[in-house]
Length: 328
Image 1 (cartoon, rainbow, N blue to C red):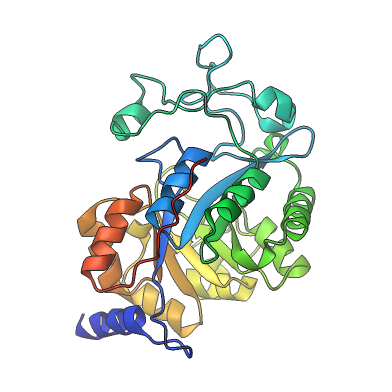
Image 2: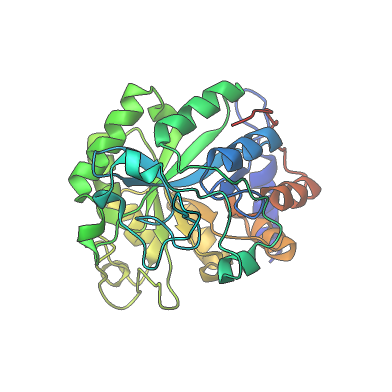
């Protein structure tokens, strides 16, 4: 552990060629959903005002080909209320079936009372009247803030098991890359996904954009396995790489591995670094878990509680990003 500890300290305090302290990647998950409605302009404005290195967010595509910011591939029954004030019924409606005009009829500013989600984030500030933003609106908010440092970590919400709920990978990636180019934001993003097909396309079409390989190895939501193929990994299965997930990601062309934090240990982080992969873990909310991940030597943390992440990182001597106060 002494070696791991020294590596973590070295990473946190490494000096760049310009003499600045290398920033540990503090990412606000869905804008910091413990504090404000997830993936909305209020949550992103709060994160920008606080100061984060990265806004983590998710995108889907409407029927009229607009990229909208949402963790689900459609309207979330725990978040979306119609004009009548009634939350929509499960399982929700895929965005590919809705125009942007239809999407904007729904209010996502308050969690459904009594839901498991509401119990998970009881202190979230409700902002009634909040609409699902477009990705273009998020770019505008970042520009409005004046924060030239912050990056966006954009997840493509696509599931190979439910192809009817999103565009095919080629169209999804084309729409995203075209928007990034039009908005001149390509040099300020990473693109992440559990569905590695989209990442492989990004690497082919826009090789300068770093790709982030999301993984979950345990539970019902597992997307990758060490001993058998997975529909999520575009044919780059660990079983073909000596049972090594980092080596499978490196072979696929990834720049960053983003695992569930419960799936990593010191040996895996060391192996990743030896391959030139950065490790950014999700979703870490408890102070003791954040501290443990930093001590293990991860390169960044995605958290629903960016304020807690900032506090623990600061206590560890990590330089904190400046805040840029902005309103939605």
